[in-house]
Amino acid sequence: MRSGNFKQKYSDLIVLTDSPAVKAWLVVLAVLLVAAPWLLGNYALSHLTIILFTLVGVLGLTILTGFAGLISLGHVGFLLLGGYAYAIAVTRLGLPPEAALLVAAVVPAFFGLIVGVPSLRLHGLYLAITTLAFSYIVSAAILAGGSFTGGGRGILVMRPTLLGFDLSSDAAFYWFCLVMAAIALLFTLNFRRSYAGRALVALRDNDIAARTMGIDLVRYKLLAFLISAALTGVAGAMMGMYLSFISVESFPFLLSIEALAIIIVGGLGSVLGAVFGTIFIVTLPDLFNTLMGLLGEQLQGLMTTSAHEIKALLYGVAIIGFLRFDPRGLLGIWHDIRHAWVYWPLRY
Amino acid sequence: MDYFIELVVSGLVTGAIYGLVAMGFAIIFKATGIINFAQGEVGMFTAYATWSIAGILGTGAIATIVLAIVLGAVLGLVCERLIMRPMLGEPVLSVVLVTVGLAVVLRALVTIIWGAAPHKFEMAGADRLVEVGGTAIRVGQLSVIAFLILALLGFWFFLRRSRFGVAMRAVAADEKVARLMGISSAKVQAFAWASASALAGLAGAMFAVIYGLMPTIFELGLKAFPATVLGGFDSILGSGFSGLIIGVFENLVGGYASSTLKEVAGFLLILVVLMVRPFGLFGEKRIERV
Image (cartoon, rainbow over all chains, first blue to last red; front, side):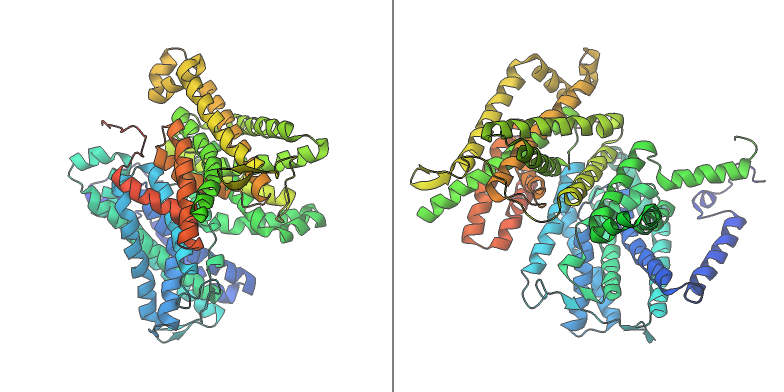
C-alpha cells in the first residue's frame, strides 16, 4: 500500500509519475496502441486516428486556455491556417512534406503572436471576442484569396511520404498520428512542469501578483499563444491529410466549440483530462447514435438527416452538464474512482 | 450621393437591430459581469417561435411584436432559472462557457425543430413603402429604428428613475455591498436575462420580418458584439447607440469596398478601437487591485 506523500527532493514533486504500477500500465497501453492496426477493424482504426489528431489540437488549446487561462473561441482559425499552410506549401510551392509540416506550425505561430498582442491589453472576455473575430477574419481572407488559396473550392491534398514512410495506407497514417500525438503529449506534460509552464499557471491564477514575483507577462502570454497556435496548426495539417481535402467548410466554427467542450468535459487545465475529454467527446456522437438505434428506427433516421445539429446539441449539453454538476470533469470522476480503488474499504 | 444616402439609411436599419441585441449584451454584463454568448441564438429561437405561434393565431402586426417581446422574456427567464441561477458564484470562465453551450444547443434546436430552409415572416403592413428624405423605406425598417430609440429612452429612464433600475446599477457597481443592502442579486440577474432576451427577441423577429426567417439569424449576436465592445460593455445606452455606428460603417464598407470585407468590417473596427481604448468608447475604466 502507498504511504502518503513523503518527498525528499524538489524533483520528486514535479516528476511525471512516481508509481511503478502506472509505468507498467503505460507500457501495456503503448504496446496495445502500436498493435492497434492488427487488432481493430477499419472503422475503429479511423475512429482512433481521429481521436489522435484531435488530441494534438486539444493539447494546443489546453496550453492556452487550460494553463494560461486565456479563453479562445477562435481556435478553428489556427486549425485553418495550419491546414492551408501545409496544403499551399505542398501543392503551390512544391516543398517536401517534412518542410510543409514545419510551415504548418510556423505560420499559425506567427499569427498566434499577432492575436496575442491584444491579449496583453485585453482581459478575459474581450480576448475571447478578439479570437472569435480572428477566426472569422481568417476564413473570410481564405475565401477571398483567389487561386492561391483555392477560394471556396478548397485544395486537394495527397497523403505524403514522410521521412521515407509512405502514409497512404490507413495503418501507416494511424502510426504517424500516434507518433505525433505522443510527441505532443510528452511536450505538453513537460512544458507544464518547466519554468515557463509554471509561470503561465501563475499568470492565470493572479496576473498582478505573478508580475510582482518577477514573471514577464508579455513574454509568457505571447509564448502561450505561440506554442498553442503551432500545435493547433500541426493538428490542422494532420486533419487536412486525413480528409485529403482542405476547404473552409471542412473547418466549421463548431470545431472551436468542440475543442472547448473537450477541455471542459475532461477537466480544465489538465493534460490527462484533455486525453479523457478527447476520447469522450469524439466518441459521444457514435455512442448517441447506437443509443438511438436501440430506441427505434425513427430516431436513428433523425440522427442521419441532421447529424451536424445532433453533434452540436450533444457538445452543448455536455458543456452545460459538466460545468453545472461536476466542474472537475472526467478527471475528477477518474480521481474519485482511483481513490476508492486504492483505499477501499476505507473512505480515506 | 443618392447611393451614399441609401447605404447610410439601410445601415441605420441593420444598425438598429444590432443596437437592440448589443443593449442586451450590455444589460447582462452590467448586472452579472458575464457576456451572454447565446444572445443571438435567443433572438433567433424567439423569432422562429413567434413565427410559428403568430401563424397559428393569425395575430396582427402589433400583437406579433408584443408576442415576440413576451416570448423572448419567457425564454430568457427559463434559461436563467434552469441554467444560469445554479451557476451564481462560479468563476466567470465557467459561467461564460455555459452560455456558449446554451448557444450551441439553441442553434441546433432551431434547425432540428424548424429545418434549415428559409421562410418568409409575414407581418401586415411591414412591407409598405414610405418616403423619407428622398429614399423609399419600408415601414418594417423604419419601425426598427423607432424601437431602438424607444428602448434607449426606456432604459435611460429605468436606470435613472426606477427603484429596481438603481438596484441593478448598485449590483453592477459592487455586488457584495448591494447584497448587504438587501438587494437580491438573483432577482436582478433574472430581470437582466428577461429584458435582454426580450430585446433580442424583438431584434430577431424584426430581422426575420425584414430579411426573412433563416437559421443564420444567430449571426446577429456576432455582428452585435462589435457594437457592445465599441460602446463599452458596461454602458447599456452606449452599446445601443454604437449599434448604429457599426451598422452604417459595415454597410459603407460593403458598398464601397468589398462584400467579403463587409462581414468582418465590425470586427476590424473594434480591433483598432480596443487597442486604443481597451474599455470601449463609453465604458468606464477599471482600476484593479490585488
